[in-house]
Image (tube, rainbow, N blue to C red; front, side, top):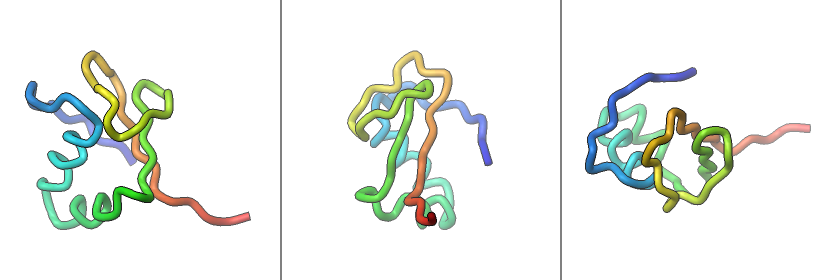
Length: 68
């Protein structure tokens, strides 16, 4: 799924965005609970969680994926 949200100006990094999103509700908090397993992309480029998001038009999060 996807969400379009307005990000407050003081949110500067992917990690800060995760904090902001996790505070929205219990479902988001659970989704972002284990950051060790999260992967992120900013404008379709994989980045570290400390990457800046200034000027980004898309931030995507990828949970752990299993399968064959």
